[in-house]
Each structure stands twice: as C-alpha cells, then as structure tokens.
Length: 304
Image (cartoon, rainbow, N blue to C red; front, side, top):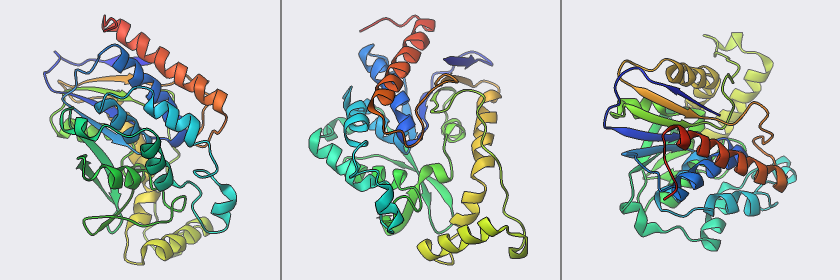
C-alpha cells in the first residue's frame, strides 16, 4: 500500500529513503526492481540504512534482481544466519560474508556508482552513538555496506572506516527522512519495511545507574564489554524506539513545503527480520513489486 501527504507545491529537489530491516528488505527489493523496470528514477539523491542501503546499491548501479537473488539465495544460508554459531560467541548474522559472497557471485557494477545519483548510507558512530551519513564511492562501498548492517551482538567483528568504528545505522536513525529534508529534499519518497501504523515500544535510560532494570544492567555491561566503557552507544540503543517513532511522526506531519510519499508493506506482510522461508521471501518480493506498481500508477508512470 502507499500513502501520499502533500503540503504545498512540489519542489525540484527529490530524495529516495529506504529503511532496513534485514530480511524484510525483500519488500524494498521488489519496489526498487519495479522502479528500474519502469525506468523511474527522478531522484537527486538516495539514503539507505542496513538492508535499505544494500538494496539501493543495486538501484543506483542499475542491476535489477541482484538484491532479490542475494536475499533469497544467499541470506537464507547457514553461512549468513546461524543461531548455534551466535550462541557460541560468533556471528548470529555474518553480514561480512553475505556482502562479499554476494559481490563475488554477482559483482556490483562499481563504475556505475559515479554515474548514478549520490547514495548516502547511515551508520552509527560507536564512541558517541551519533548517526553519520557517508556518501558511497567505489572505494568505500564494501566497508560501508558491512558497517551499516553490523547489528551489535549479531555481528561481532569491529568495522572500522578511517580509524572510526561504526555499527548498524538502524541503531541511531532507521529512517533518515529528516536528514534528507535537512539536506534540501522537499519531495521525498520513503520505502518502509513495516506496515503503516507500526510504532516501536519506547524505553528511556534513567538518570542514574540505580534506576536501571535488570535487563538494562545486563545490556549495559554487554555493550561495555564489546565496545568499551567510554562508548555512548548504550544510551543510543535505549533511545532507539523514540527516535524511530519521531521519524514516523515527521513522515505523518512533514514541514510546510515538503511532500512525503510512503510505500509500505500491507498489515499482513508475513516476512520478519529473520525469515528464512524462501517462498515467503519470494511472496514478499512480489508484494513489493505490486506496491510499486500501484504507486507508479498514481503518478501515471508507464513501463520504459
């Protein structure tokens, strides 16, 4: 389904923002493949997080079906998702393996990165828990894609770019729609991985250690062991729900002069973050294609 909110006349600066969500990214892969089939790319720049970023890498390089095949054929392997390995202290989801194996099997058209629209990837800086929005280049794309997918505890290998350690951008800004607006976009298309109306549960870190619940104490100690006692990422993780919901509020009530168009899966979307059933994933891809078709019909866009 889609939802369009228009406040004033459409401006000239446009952006495409794609949420992550691990295997739920199969929906966005269908949306973006449909866009490519129709030759639809009116955007001045794109922004993605986690699986949203990897989906956009195929979009800006003009490689339809690439993300679909990687999600369905490679992300369902034990090499990527392995609960037993995770229980033994290894990677629950080996995003490094998935990205590089996918690139080996279906090489990304790296020269096309400089020819397409700019792509910015959201990552979370570990030392202060702040979001960073880094532009993709042929030289940094491999490290950036691993970093934006490196969910704390699920992927344990440190990802360091230019001497700075990063983790999954969804920890700090899962839907960088406000950032797109701050960068000048006034016509923004947002592809969500959850149905419209979804909201995250909100938790807030107490002012003192004494106010922490048992689960918060355990999580804080685990974060300190993994990232160091001086890292501020724990506070960011505690605020994730409220930050996510603020992005949804921004989408629901855009500033004057800003148009936000939303493409989201239906309420009964059956794909979860770690769905490994190939048929469900294929169905989720088809739902994304249909949602894009409906969206493009409202804009009177025909096949290229």
